[in-house]
Image (cartoon, rainbow, N blue to C red; front, top):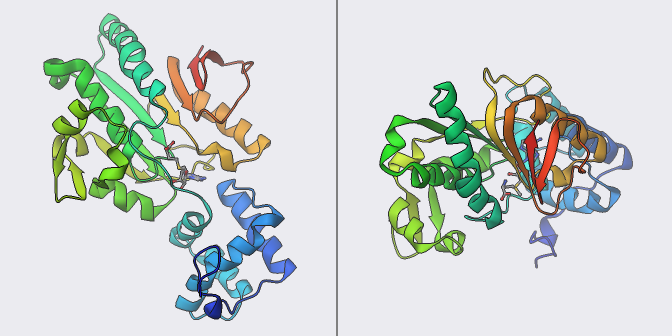
Length: 286
Ligand SMILES: C[S@@+](CC[C@H](N)C(=O)[O-])C[C@H]1O[C@@H](n2cnc3c(N)ncnc32)[C@H](O)[C@@H]1O
């Protein structure tokens, strides 16, 4: 018998005390910025059952100690994968991609040519399974056409979850994920594996660098600023204060005139001192 979260009720043997829930909730908030409300308590308990059983633990306190003691970050990554949604698909919120190719790229090209630079740096933060990052790489190829090889254009794609990054790196997707993508793009940049799956072509795979990275890291390791940052449908998990701090950090990581994209259901207000509102969910670094 399955419950509403798809877990066998007969297996659900672990219960959480208020103290344990508070400890784990505070840990998640401090490490990854996700604010679990009391409503999510049961969801957490249900989703963690399998892990506790696999690790042969007897309660949630033991699990808490395991996560804070794991210096590799893997335990935390697994925990985040369980409590957040990784939902994404190619060409999600398509107006952003049209703007990227038709407005941002011509503007950036002119600017780069003026200063004699050729390296284009795009960061896809919270990339999940990689669809957004690959599409940005594809659109840069589409924009430059035969001139593409003259440019050093790449996408850095990061997420906290190792699980989604593995899928992203494989570049293999079900047909469902490509449903919204114009045919000329899927025909040119994907190879059929079988009737249900396709893979991104190697050239595009090589344009994207996937890395595990926690957005709560207050000292980003990036040597150069980005021309564009996409951080869409990630900050929905964060509370007001965490989101504001992160947006300030993104602003410092953008070149002047660089663009910042968030999800359409998200907001950072129109009054940020360093970010000028351009259109819904698109901002430009002053
Ligand atoms: C819904 S997906 C967004 C995918 C894509 N950007 C889109 O808009 O379709 C949200 C992603 O944010 C990631 N995430 C959540 N908290 C994070 C954090 N603190 N650092 C890095 N990634 C995080 C999750 O692992 C998840 O893959």
